[in-house]
Amino acid sequence: MLGEDQAIAVVGIACRLPGAANPSEFAALLARGGDAVADAPAERRALVPEVPGVTARGGFLTGVDGFDAAFFGISPREAAAMDPQQRLLLELGWEALEHAGTVPAALDGTRTGVFVGALADDYARLLGQHGPDAVTPHSFTGVQRSLLANRVSYTLGLRGPSLTVDTGQSSSLVAVHLAVESLRRGECTLALAGGVNLMLSPESTLAVARLGALSPDGRCHTFDARANGYVRGEGGGLVLLKPLSHALADGDRVHCVVRGSAVNNDGGGSGLTVPDPDAQRELLLLACERAGTDPADVQYVELHGTGTPEGDPAEAAALGRALGAARPADRPLRVGSVKTNIGHLEGAAGIAGLLKTVLCLRDARLVPTLHHDRPHPRIPLDDLGLTVQRTTEPWPDTGGSPRIAGVSSFGLGGTNCHVVLSSWSAASEPDGREGGAAGL
Image (spheres, helix red, strand yellow):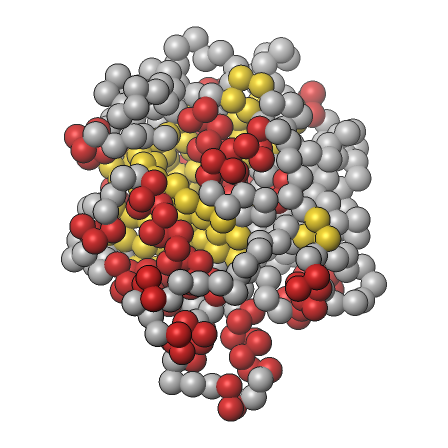
């Protein structure tokens, strides 16, 4: 059993995702099995290179050029030089605090940490294309990736750790892992953690296409026989984290609890970009060990699940060996991927999957994975003890024990992360709503 002194509570959430401008809209999108991947809107068509193998479909946000600079005390000139990813994170940080019922001004001077995962520098690339006359005194701070986290810390007066993390596609989940560890060490007393990804340059899409990672039909077919690559998506999300003991003392609403997490690397294998199922299996078991969780007690895993012909079989094999194969035939491990709803958010993919899982644990329901009709021939689901969640339904009965779920995110260079979450309930929840079954 994990004690309250080690468990980390999720007390606030914020997101801006394709088809969902906030957590309520995101929960509704997931519950109805919504597909927010669509043709690029007219104003974004220039971002899609007109080359073979590149589809105009993706998970797009609207209004990424909009920002209330005056609200954050930023001049119009400086705001124009800022990477829109910085601007989006400022908004999300404020919204996550509001969602938790925390007044942002009350955190000025506190040891609140900011941990942001990101891999894209599209805005810097665009600036370079406009020549030296486009460079202003605000350009350097406007496009530095470190400022993604630092801008939030500066604007809100936060004095805890402030880190921008780049581990490839696992960046935002690794940021959550680092925030949890920082809270447990006492480096900070509160932490904003998550990530951001905006598609602002056609060159970034072209690079992914030339790698051979994009689906020509513009869909993620996770664990499906049609798996042929992924479709890109954009957006961002943050969670507000606090030690569970502090959250209970403060009367916060606890959406769920982070029990434990782990990070590793494939460390070799057949290629730099080829996933290694042995390393992934080690990661899953290590995360469960740190969470004090029996692997057999995990009821759902939010997959990395890109829908690539090499990545999916490797992930399935690791899951089966670590968490699935010893289960009764009538109680397989349920798995799914939010990438089928909103596309692959790359540097922000992990936080998108984490937010989906937080909402599912909180609301005690599972939601469908789209575009899955027939299992990939290299993924024997029954033998592995896995089943793809394809409908919206109540979370399976746990007999009074907490609902437990895992979230996976894997980086292109082999940096893997897995986080174990569980439900939480307490009679003193502010709105009286049950957040889960029994406590940890």
